[in-house]
Amino acid sequence: MDQLISIFGQGLSNGFYPVPQQAIGVGSAFEVSPHAQDLVYHVLVPLSPPPGHAFHLELDAAGVLQRNCCVHVELLCTDTREQLGEDMLCFLHHSEEELRRKQDPSLLHTLCTGTYLDVDKTVHWFYRSMRVAWLLLPQSHHWHLMLQPSGRSCRLSRDQKSFMAEVIFGVRQGDSDVFGSQPTEVGIPSTTWLETYIVAEAKFFRHISRQAPGDSWHYKCLQLLSRILVGAGFSSYALKMVVMHLLSTVPLTQWCRKDFWRMMDTLKYLHCSLDTKQLNHFVIGNERFPMEISLPSDFRVAEAPNLFQHLASNPDAHMKAMQEYVHLLLQLKQMLV
Ligand SMILES: [Zn+2]
Image 1 (cartoon, protein in one colour):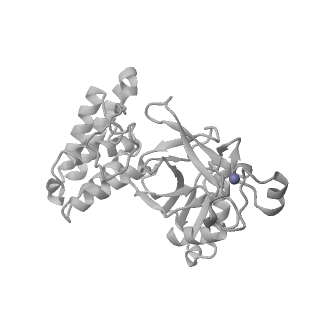
Image 2 (cartoon, rainbow, N blue to C red; image 1 turned 90 degrees about the vertical axis):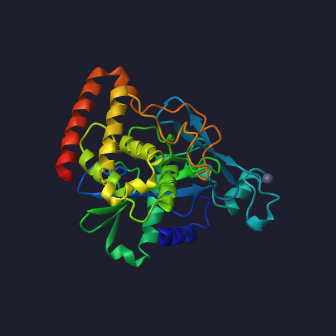
Image 3 (cartoon, protein in one colour; image 1 turned 60 degrees about the vertical axis):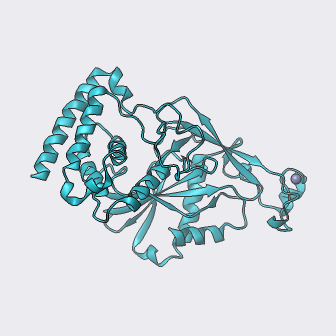
């Protein structure tokens, strides 16, 4: 990804397009793989504004669990910024005529709808540029770059499609590890981005791995459980939250291979959460979230959203979730035997 982003960046130096930064590995297969046989790795590429532009994430607090946001693109005065080079004209203070003759259009005229960065236009630009950069890499002989049918994300895959890397991109919220990222589903307005904590979560797992003994099994535990979870009603995200809660309470020395019963603890915690219909988000509203991971200022003191809120208001969904839990438990017991 780093090679790709580097070529990608060089090829774009002439226009005023978002600038891809170093990619961040945000999850291995346990995160979002819908099919048990596929391994999908996720990489997030942060996008920075080009010279003369600024990005502002405008949050919409309507959804509690999934906040939407828009990326407002602002033009900045560059008259006093000598480091930008002599050739750059200020988008605010030069005439339209001069700008049209001498300079590439601003981002507002290429990838925006109104003054907002447009998801669909950005994905297509990203994919087109990736394709050009991709062909210059030797890996392109064995790996294929595809735009997903939704038209909103791209994947790199080996010939057999059993190993894939999904590339998503995001705009950083301030200087925090929280991003606005493109929704990968269709049907969401093209100026709507989704707030994602996936980078903060990945950093939490790295933080744990640095402290855990070498034979720690916490990742494997999450992966194995996610595998048997496929098809069940609760998301792998809920399971990830459970494991994160346990990792911050159960001593790390108790996650080694011989303690594989930790998987049973994970399910017990899940059971208790289902029973009480309460599973708090681990990143939002958690004052104990490691300080070294940067969150927006109000995050740690906010009220933690309940991931099982929907179960409290829907008895049928709750009953179904409990049945699926029993099924999960049996599968796990079978696997352990
Ligand atoms: Zn100016």
